[in-house]
Image 1 (tube, rainbow, N blue to C red):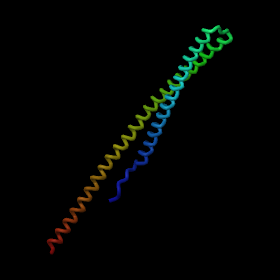
Image 2 (cartoon, rainbow, N blue to C red; image 1 turned 90 degrees about the vertical axis):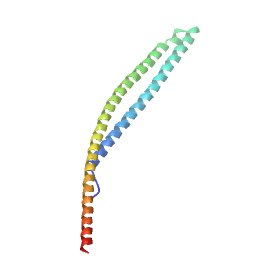
Image 3 (cartoon, rainbow, N blue to C red; image 1 turned 180 degrees about the vertical axis):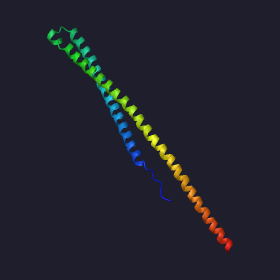
Image 4 (cartoon, rainbow, N blue to C red; image 1 turned 180 degrees about the horizontal axis):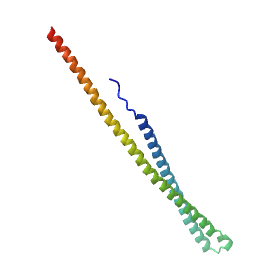
Length: 149
């Protein structure tokens, strides 16, 4: 009897490749989110340092020209933090949609693999049935030749 070959193996491979790609995209998104959170933390730390520096400058007899640029500098830093937050929110939405997509892809693969298992068990039953028939034929031939002698 010929070796077992499932007709949808290529489809399973393609679906698994899509699943792996989706996992890689989720990983990239998560890495980008971590990277942005690090940038955000850096901007927040920098903002705090700027406030402290401003306080130190104001303790001395500083002129308006020396202190005038600090508020706009802090505002620009806050704008950066806000843009980072917006990008993180967008990436979180992307990650959630990819996770939903991954679930669908996994369920598709699981359905096809269960169909493969059913088909294999059917093949195995047929194989065992034919093998048993062959054994029975050989036993009958052996008993007939033994009786003939």
